[in-house]
Amino acid sequence: MFNEKNAIILAAGFGMRMVPINTMYTKGMLQVNGEPLVERIICQLKEAGINDIKIIVGFMKEEYEYLIDKYDVKLIVNKEYMEKNNLHSLKLAAKYICNSYIIPCDVWCGENPFINEETESWYMVNDLVDEESIFRLNRKNNLNVIGKDSAGNGMVGISFISSEDSEWLVKEINDLCSDPVYDDCFWEQALIEDGRIKIKARVVHSSQYVEINTYEQLRELDEHSDQLKSDAITTICKALDAVEEDITDITVLKKGMTNRSFLFNCKGSRYIMRIPGEGTNMLINRREEAEVYNLINGSGICDDIVYIAPSNGYKITRYLTGARVCDPFDRDDLEKCMAKLRAFHNMKMKVGHKFDIFGKIDFYESLWEHDKSIYKDYEKTKKGVITLRKFIDAQEKDECLTHIDAVPDNFLFVGDDIRLIDWEYSAMQDPHVDIAMFCIYALYDREHIDQLIDIYFENKCSDEVRTKIYCYISACGLLWSNWCEYKLDLGVEFGEYSLCQYRYAKDYLKIASERIS
Image: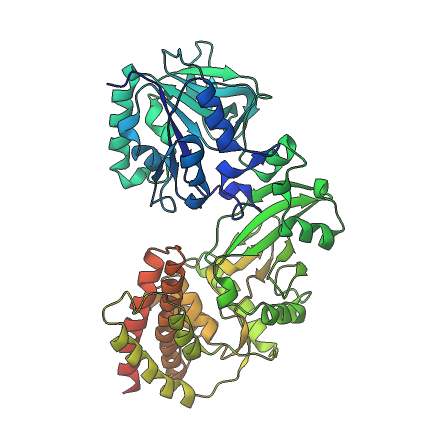
């Protein structure tokens, strides 16, 4: 069917491990010695006589548009690049796989790896030992899948698929993509059978073939690259009186709901840097956040703050070794966390700003790019939730500095101590709002909600206060539902969490209303 060779370049993904520059550049456009990686790959392909080149794009896809005119390539857009891994990118080009090179966009090849006389399929690894690799070369030149506790050969990721092997590979790709279990898989999963890769290995020297996965790998390859310049790195250097070379072992943390954070070493100590995420300048007043941290830092309540910028929200904290988050279904954890929360509330700290729940409901709604809510009965639900305000306002409240986001993931157990982290929304409010927020983030049912209320109040909660907390659960459910709708406009999806928040708004509107009447 296809006699001439072709190439498929995978360039759709975020490149999350490239922190702190992962939102500034798409990986294919990273430059080594002034040349974008993807352009070097294209030129090497054309030098070998391979002119049929397709590039799968997604994140920052517009950055690749000029290549159509400059090199006569074709772009294929992966609309699901945020939710699915590159197995699904390759599926979009599966019909073209036959005598094909499959190439990750983040590879720098000192020597041209492409020729026009390929006959047998292969998958490229280098001669380095890599703890993150899942493949190890055996004596028969096969790549075996190894366990997580073992080290394998460094994965370069370039491969060639012959016409003889294309049929079974395309079938396997389509089969895997039909099962949601494989949504997060790399395309190499389609090559694996009986614990090994079905095609032979091609082993190359690590000095000539480098996959650039991290900021440090780019720095090692081209220490003078302009793309190494980053506000985050500059901030670290100033805050810790360091030079760029002091900053090592940069590791991305799991992307949070609001921010991107990464671990790093500097002068023998470990730190976390928080970089505000998409749209947070609209959601959070960083000067107010800095006011809170300046008040509580050193009190043993929060994490250890080294630096915070009121202007852009950049924050550096000391890494808490051995920390773990609260298990919201462990009674012992809950008792300890609620005791910590009670103690904080009893300190009666004061700041100059307030968190207005009902005002925020309207504010998040005003940020939507869409004309109306994605929920068909939103207006009815909102109208009902607003009626709860009369009861809330009528209750006695001893307002003080309240965390607002006191959810299970923000309670860190550090040895015998507990720290509360992530004070972005913290402000003056009724401290009982923190109980409601814990419940709706943990996705509690009513039995667990009542259990948490009893733990916090040590079985001395009045009916009026319990009803008030139910009202907060309803109002805060709508608040975070609206927040999720705004984030959805930015391309951030929260799955079950967003749906559950809207359900809390409706279900606890009914429960609270019945108790009030």
